[in-house]
Image (cartoon, rainbow, N blue to C red; front, side, top):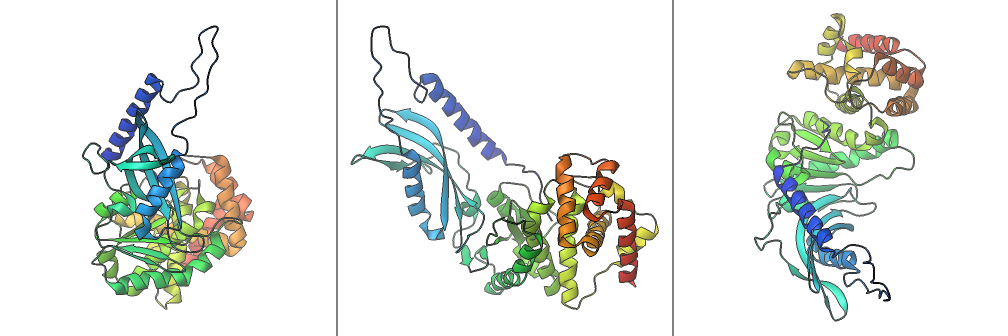
Length: 394
């Protein structure tokens, strides 16, 4: 399940408003503005910025403070909230990359209110007001995980799990990532793109995951991917059959690997690639996928073209209609790959990106994209998909 479009909780909006207000106040007071014109007959004297090096000072402080996460890289963004005399109060939004090698994508560790001042001739963090009660800074990212959560950083994955997630579940996730991620990157990563170490959060509930990610999670789902990070509801995930739960993880990892080639495409392409790899994983474990549902739908005239026009959502509701949309996407993705290989799929994604659609693609745009991908109209590719699903259903 792929999450498109963040829906940030209200506390973050309030913090943003607080920062904007503080910045406006600073600008009005002239504390951070440009040069002030000198009166006639006088010479302007440029005074060195007393807060030069604020970013470096904040990074040093946050690197020490977040050392418990063993970050590979630390990124800090600063917003000035106030200046008074020789001190400056800033909002430091910090994210870290975990693991070795190229590391994971950056994940937030929260925001902190820091006071900067010069000590011994060097700008330093002289106070941390985050827990003083003066600011409303809800925890997010790693900071939103419960105390004693485990961070298991391996060579090919980083798993962050709540304290009661069994070691066996954490190990299983790491093993699946190590098994499938090299192949997914080989198939789907764009040339020159960086292959990050996958980051997987295992939480007891979606409410925790929503605090970590800063977006709403799909309440009906067990797994989700957002912005290159995978989230699992650990208890529900572990309660599934082993092959099914590992295939679900493969689905989310495929979103991570394929993000570059499906970006800007219809939802059927985005979810179709992930469901296609999920099906392949199940088949590799000797389990038969239930193709009969989509095969039956195809026999009664399933509207594939209409589904492939949607860039966000499919305009359907309910478990079975949603399931069929996933299956149709996978069937047609499979037909493209059988006909044009990985290169054909890349051409398909590139063709959709050129149109830059954020609502509904036209039938002409869909047809043009498939001709660019495999040299055939959409109807022909869809017919190939239908034949393959009827054969797979038996």
